[in-house]
Length: 556
Image 1: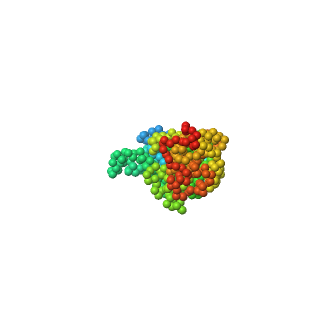
Image 2: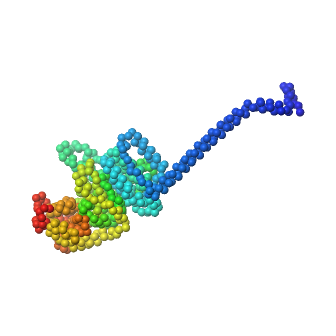
Image 3: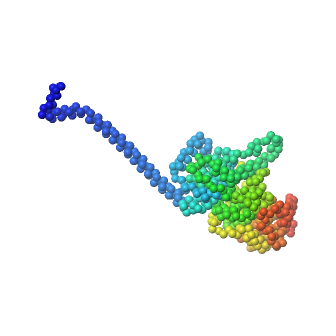
């Protein structure tokens, strides 16, 4: 069939040549379209392959992370102790800290303790000894009850995690101390789910700078007192921050690696200083005695320290005692002692906290302690290792370094501690002391104690001092109470055997138990009255020598 285009006179024939001609006319566009299409497909495939590779890499990371979490919960992973190699001197410190926090958010983190478990915070007082604080915090981390609570998730969610949260109160702004606190904040919150708070205390200028109304001589003459006053001010401020709840309300959530639910108001607080190492069962001991401390109004505190706890003078790791002497050095106080109990609202320590400094001696005063007693262990659960830059300038270090730290991990919650009830303990203790063999010399006491309990009488402080020196125990007294004493009686497990040497005041010799024996809580008894009732003279002449009827020897 022939068609003719009128305007051009060109004739079109249905032929092979005509089809070829059409392909020739359009053929110049076909290769270009194919090339663009192939390029798009290549790019699309490359993007898809990259996405798939990244997804596989991400899933692999998740699988490895799950294995790590499983390993951590099984207790097989060993946590590395933080290292502090001049971190604060580097210009990149802030950047490193921010990176670490981001990494912590991306990595696994142990679930936080339930707020209901955190009504018994641990307070650590610190100033400028970063290496001491680090040692103390690492031991707390190793021994913290959350280690056991988190190993079996869900099983102990209702159990009290005593020592939680952890609150470190820093006096001043030492940067190395801050670095240690921040590192351990990450460690505790990530590995144990235990919140760690930092409080910053600003020392009063009146104790750092000489007031205008005091001359230079007087300022320098009292320089030795200022560290003790600074420490007392810091102590009182930190304890009030905890019991008032301000430590939580003033906290900056940005300091933590995740949102921290606010703990409840503290029922009690455990107090350490930056140079105190704890035993493995320290928290178990505190937990087992916490309820007794809360309910027994005759108790003032629970202490983990024995002032006479030398290696050769102690033996029973499970034995606890009541004492009229406050040891400090790792102790627990309930809210009613700080605020004041309902029946004695004006007896709260916060009413006039240590106005002259020396907070521990202030606590021991009769009008402050008010006859209340302290629970202490036979073998110490704390060890004081600080020897530089402390308030006491290390003067007690040699004595304290000889105190044995317990090495037996006692499960205190499984022990029956009902013998610590005031009347029961008083009855049992009196019976044992009254049955002890009365001897007239310390040499006799040392020879007979291998086979039975013995007792030696002291009638004044000189006699007590020299007898104590002979036995290798603390020889001083505070407010009429020798260290570790119960109703004026000091016990010594001489040689670490089964029996005791009891140093007794004269009233014990009379053989009749006083009506107020072990029951002096809330009685108004000053030092003079106490010593008079005990039959102890305040005679304290340095030249005093024992008579033969007291010691049997002049070589004590």
